[in-house]
Image (cartoon, rainbow over all chains, first blue to last red):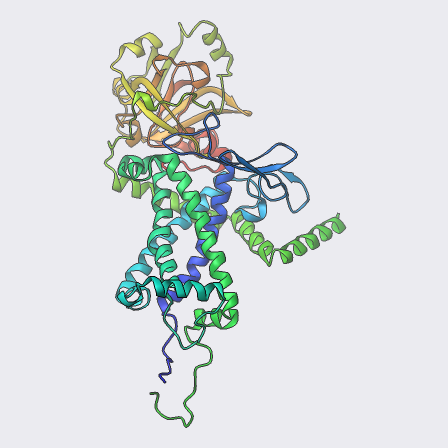
Length: 273
Length: 257
């Protein structure tokens, strides 16, 4: 049997993974503060307190709520109305523990967001380029023809549901669901976040007006930016659950060092097969 | 005092611990947020954004214009809803009949121009989207005098770098003001609007004239403009950062995002 002692994660993948974990967290938290400045979302070109919002996170002074379309949910304590670290009532959409900075400061959150957005966009671009040349895309992410079978996909889904993962540490390749989710995040979701973000800039609307057509107007872009961020949070939650289920220590260690954990040692110090 | 602080700190730590260390991360971010060197580094992105925008777009590239049918049913009001200076209130009572817009500073020929004379100049009409820094947008039709015509009339000095707009409203305790650079000042869509949606500009939207600088956010669009001053140095005005929100809240001078 072949022993795979090659690095489980490429260096570029590891650097980008951890840098991106930090940068995306900062972007999420500063983004939530920016959202707090106007906690409503619309479709189309325009939208303000005078117009119908499809999503609203607000308060009735005594309770917090989230309204999606015509459905309202009470969220007192977390969304719309919450207590800060000193038990003062705060009438903000997202609570202080979820935002950068903690207390309401739109100007500061914008400074953070628009500075780290550069690192995020340039980092993603660099990761894509390096992955194109180091074989990460072709060897690890590329879904092969043989994998494109409903039966294979279905059996992978069943394995995931039964919490049976190919967690043989010697397996360095991703399963089909992993590949599809990584491809979706790297090539669709993250670019969507970047381009919907750019679409909200009035100056960029003058430079690249086609972005408005692509996303259906500035307020649609703002909605899609928020939905994209929510999807990314869902991805990270699923990702963390998978790390926990498949062995968090070895998973994290191999994402740091690149190596599988229990590298099978050849018995008599012989040559690697 | 000391006891209180210890208690609060202990509670912070407890909360931090319950949030899985989240409190510590947040505490770190807040500390960075207050750190002058870090904030200065963050501010570097503003210049980078401005340079990128200027590189990607022609200096005369137009902000998108919309159709009459796209106009917002109700245009949200924001900021001051009227001018507050005694001078302004007197002009308002008199329907701005004796109001004069002053254009001075680094110009060869300072001018005072009344509303009728301003309306008699060549005008531009545009249906544009107003984007507030908070995140909302509203669309309206604006009609007004291109700023560049006034600057040409006043013979803008070649040494001038910025155009400052002095307003008649106090927001909080401080007078509102704004400024833009010459690229935006000479942009074809940069107008001093005196009509909105086909009617005389209402007071709550900035009567008698407000600035429209369509490639930037709402706070740059000064309302109740009384005086336009050309300068090469913004540091001598009010807080020195070129505008009300720039001075009081560290909002970007370049509001293209």
